[in-house]
Length: 95
Image 1 (cartoon, rainbow, N blue to C red):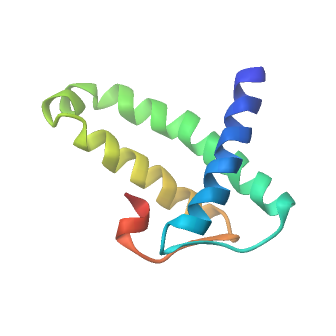
Image 2 (cartoon, helix red, strand yellow):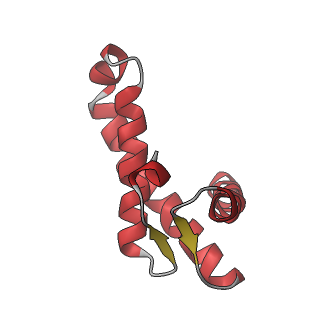
């Protein structure tokens, strides 16, 4: 439980920093929406990201990790689809 809470805190800081630094990554809302988006991202990444990385481990190894980057981008895109406070407008913002 503590590990999950720490991940939410780290993802909250990461989303806040990304919205200020990365063009095409827009966050609109207050602190409550920021924590909600971080919770959604942590949940999506924990469930789907772990399963996909386990299933595609050999391909991730053969592609020298590029497939892991695509899986992470997919998790961020899925978070964008689930959370209204985040808007990702460019492909480079996903990578």
